[in-house]
Length: 146
Image (tube, rainbow, N blue to C red):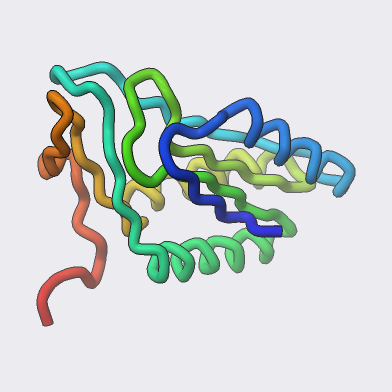
């Protein structure tokens, strides 16, 4: 079972979160906490588009599994590739943990680190064109020309 799932286009939130719930509700986790990111209608965009560098994403995600495992928890994530229209989801994260406090703290840390460190490039969709969203992008630590 893969804890990291990538999909083309918008995410089917109910299907993904219900699957995670059904997969893990009998695993004796006392908390299953999800975060759903929804594309906002702002600045005249029609949606967002995403490129993902999967080798680095997989490595980053595995480091989070290691952190979570130290607290008897697991981290789950689904993200979109390509175009995602306004008012639909491009990102879902979850933490499953025996203890509520652990899950609450980990989901917050995970989502914040995702925004800062995951190798996912965001583009605005404007009039059918992808425009790099430079002002809302964060440089990944260690990125750059050697």
